[in-house]
Image (cartoon, rainbow, N blue to C red; front, side):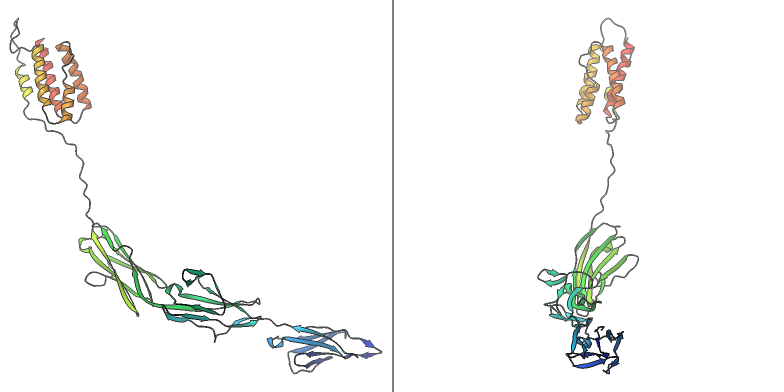
Length: 404
């Protein structure tokens, strides 16, 4: 601490300056001499006008009132207060250490700290997450030296920081780990899973346990499934949570059935079941275009071939001579036979091929039929009966040419 006092000189007399500790009435220095036995105290002056009191390695016990006094008559003095600030320090003994509790029990975390001014205590989670107070209440921090948790659960497990601050740097903190023990629990999202043969399939389970559990997969015969060419079990954990997976590389008929994911720790054991069932592989039938078979016997063609014999000339038409009326009869006979077929589509196209309406002469009608049949033959690919009809029409044309 530094201070100063003006020295008055009168008639050559030098007044002396002294420093005292007020609360203990202890004389510290007189003039240039240190009276106290405290080796941290010192005094200096400048031209006997400014007197400085020095305290090295200031301690909290040095806090208090100090008096600078001049032995005049009456005495003159001035009092100054020394405030010693102390950064916070967390005490080990009354402060809680790492705790291990069973889920559902009550917990009290305590933190004591010293410092000047008196430090403020704040509780926070080390991971920065909100503090779960239960009843759907979550807060970012808790103030006060005591943090009470009623019926602690696994969500409250983790590292907590007791932070002490009083405005004097540095702020200090202590880490307290709260460990909650509970028996294993398993959650399965899909307990019934289907797969086709040859498909790669992955079964999944989620378990929670602390202390950390031993996790494995079994089949219906309770034999543990090991990692190999067929199966690949995997486990990923985060504190008390474990994600269990079982990959079946290529599902075969022998792989269908029940699988169990098992979680076990020192407090208990639990398991979950997943059933893998068979999904039939869909069969894709090739798309084919069905056509009617060409008949091996063609009565109309035979009749037309029989009538292709060149008739003897006569003034009257003979029974074997093809005239307009006889040709019309042949055409109608062929048309009637085609219409008798069961297929409606084939009948429709056959009727379009042979149409006897509105023809003026045999030659013109047959020529027109030949042109129409040729065009339809080029555009149609699905009807076998077209070919038969067109063949008949073509033969009829040959017959007319012979007659002419």
